[in-house]
Length: 530
Image 1: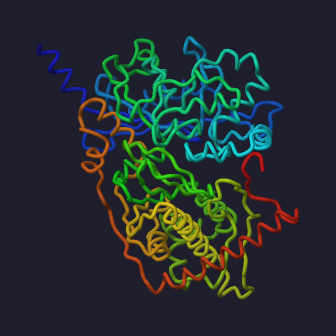
Image 2 (image 1 turned 90 degrees about the vertical axis):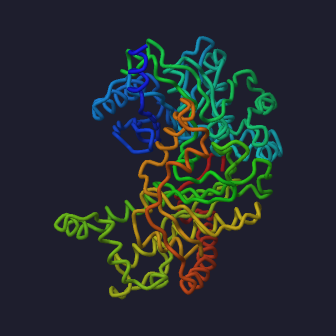
Image 3 (image 1 turned 90 degrees about the horizontal axis):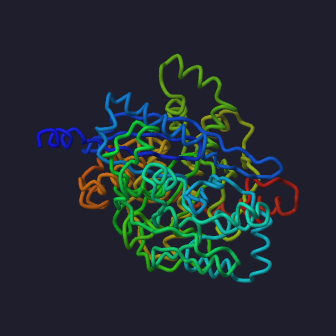
């Protein structure tokens, strides 16, 4: 009895495994939400020879990276596998893994895989209205969904396709490797597009309608459901204990929202990373918009979905600007021992609201049904170096990211009727005090910045804690663990200026898209099948 009590006392940490587009991380938390250690390993998605725009997920090599992260996180925290009470996983959405009848992986692709261009065209041309029909139920279009990719496999790797017996998402694959159970959750599985928002379950009839297998869909478990424990084999490979519980996780954005406390209906968040997501929690019975401009996903909270707008490359554009134009600021930042973005923000704060009329053309607002971008550019530049310089262009990029986010939030308001007066702002962009104030001014909303720096991993740790019985459910875990760092109030006068800029930007972007249509400029990005 004494040894059992000691074991129970020892297992008081939670682990989150976060499988992102570019890397995998293992993050250990205590049960109060404090981060104990984190390790990260980059992985590369390889383009298949002769298959344009393909991005295969190397499950054999990547499993070794996952296990390496787990071992290093334990070592860094000076813990053993016996210390981890439970773990869960989160992953890039849209990435899928296909298995044979024995649960062995056959084929997998990352979320950025865009090989199915011809298949998207085939579906649109041969099944008139089917994308609209499926979107009404799933909230997804073919642009990022699984159906075109599986059709590609059927057409090009028929022998593999015939052996397919199960499908899951990449986070689910990690959990399956650890405990032997193949399953998915609504938040991640929903991004396949073969799913019902209302039922929070597979809509296998969609696969049948396009002549795909309709019996490959595993059980759907709500986030926080206990799946089992780490197997003896996985224990040897990862260093975890066979007593560690394995718990269903979810999609990175939705679990990230839980890690930010965005768990109640009508709450909103802007996640400012490489891409920016604007999400609003809505009732699961809310119909997706008829114009198909916004994506709708199941949330990790039962009975809730999330309306989601996406802004392409906002963080990556800022990194490009830094590396292409800000060598002097890099040197200054190094000399002063400060972050180069902080230095650029200091300079940009002296630029008037509106950045002297400079209009960046990068990401459009979300047009999920027919989504393509104009050529990257800056409009309305001035040859006066006192007005048009690195500081004013930097500020214009910050303003533009907030403006496109605001347009996406306006689209969500239109079909949901949800009034938004407060926004949780998180991700790397939220570190910038000027950028946070700009988001408040552009949207006219109070902006709250959470203290947590690993929101997605914290959300996965919450799921692990729910499965282990440490927290009652995801909502109560979020309310218990999320701590706020600072808040920003909107400036009404600045909002009036930004409202006018939003109108100008929208008109300018339409004109820039016309140049793409006329083959004068090249689109920054376009969805498969367009």
